[in-house]
Each structure stands twice: as structure tokens, then as C-alpha cells.
Image (cartoon, rainbow over all chains, first blue to last red; front, side, top):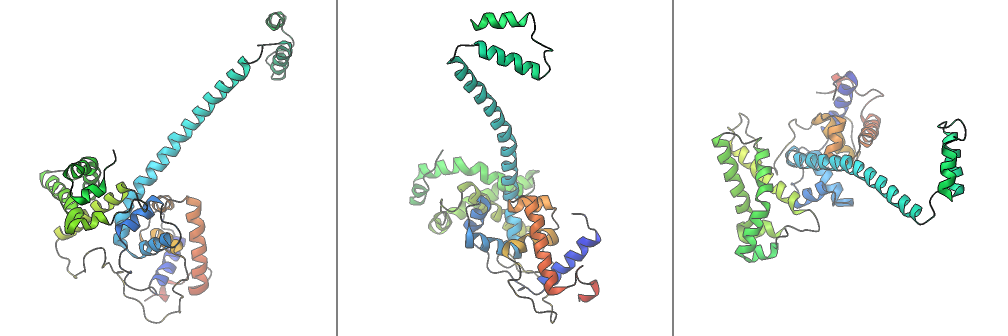
Length: 142
Length: 187
């Protein structure tokens, strides 16, 4: 964190507050409670008790930090990889569903041929009905 | 591979061997990390000894520590990682030369470095929530970045920033002016 004057002011304020707190933290909780907090299974008062203790106890912070960091990295990695994976899966699913829907109907009937032509024209792919393409589409639609 | 912890506690050798085979790698990695790499023959020996200490600690006093594990409350891998890491940290503390000023050892006896100040404004003990205090501790005592603090707690960076802002606002209301207190106000 950059140590600008605002940081120093805020840190000074925080330290004034911590001087009013009890000097010693309460007894450290069992490792199972800290492990539950790391795993995100501790909720409500259990999570609050763990965080209260972690705010006070540098030793327990040292204890949980690598495990937390590793879990955070694993989660970030999963989200990154999982995100791309989900995008790929969605693309494949769209293709499969599209194929199944399409295969259940006569391919390129007249309406579909007209729709293709219209859509290609609307995207500027064709200036107008292509003389070569139109008969081909009409033939396919028969 | 699932390991039958109840069978381990009952003294089933096959179950215990399976437990060791399944979790020795996790424990070894956690210990090695606590020893920051564990390179060199002496460091490797320390790591190996500590791994043995972890298994001994699990089965000591009729498996008291192993019996305390509850699968509903935490994953076995996280719990074993903490057991391994705390064992390694204890060993490292024992190996360090004694400090000039005696410190009580162990994770139960950590104290804040500065004495509690006398006088000053009366501050409610629960002025800040547990989450706010943890965020402020990480940012201003540990001096972690916002991203590091977010990773530690497992929340997003924006929540860290808003939690810090709310905490500072409360502290200013009780302790100082708009921009905080002047350095001369502290002993």
C-alpha cells in the first residue's frame, strides 16, 4: 500500500483506536474453527468470533495467511479457467442445440432462404440479391 | 481416496497407513512452506522431523487431536494444513535464539507491542465490527494492499475499500476530526 499522507493519517487514527483495546487477545480458538473460517464454512457468530480473534492475534494471522492465499489463488484460477470453460461449453451447447433444431426441420426452405438473403443484405454482405446465389438457394429450398 | 478416520482412531493399522499415504504430501508441503523452502540438508532434516511431529501430535493422548476433527466444520486438507503449519511455527520459535526482551511463546500468548495508553477519549469496545477491525488490521498493521487484504478475507476489493471507509468514518466520529488526529496527539 502506498504510504501517502492520507495513509499515515488513517494509520495514526487506527493506532489510536487500537491503544484502547485489550492488550492481549482472548485465547486462540481451536484450529478447527480457523480451518472452518478459511473454508468459508464458518458463518454468523462463528465467523465473527474467528475474525475478531484474527484482528487481534498476529500469530493466528500468520498461521492462516498462506492457506487463505492458496485458497484465494485456487479460487481465482478456477474462476479464470472455469470462466473460459463455461464460455466454451456455452458455445458448444449453442451449436449442438442449433444443429438439433435445424435437423428437425427441412433445411433451407423458401422462408429460410429469403431470411438468409435479407439478413446478409442487412449486414451489407450483399448489395442486392446475388444472381448466382439466388437460384442456388431456390434450388436448395425445393 | 477416502480415509476412515474412525478406524485410524480405533488403531487400525491399514487405515492409518492409508491416512499417512493420503495426507503425508499435504502435511509435507505445509511444513516445507513454513520453513520457506527447506533447502539444504539441515533444513530438509528439520522438515522431515516436523512432519513426524505432526503425525505424533495427531495420535498423542489417544488421538485427542485427531478426534477433535469434525468434517462438518472444515475440510480435512485445510485442518491438516493448519495443524502442520502450527507445528512448524512452534518448532521454528523454539529454534530461534531467545530475544533480548523475553516474550511469552506460542499462539496463545501473543501480545500487542505497545502498552495500552492511559487517558484519551473513551472508545466503545464494539465501535467497529469484527470484519471492520480485521480489514483495518490487515491494511494498517500488516500494511497489506487492498488486493492482499481481499485475498486474505476472501472478499472483493471494493468491499475492502467500503469497509475501510466506514470504519474510518466511525473512528473519526469518536477520535478525531475530519482528516484524523494530529501526530502530536499520540504519546
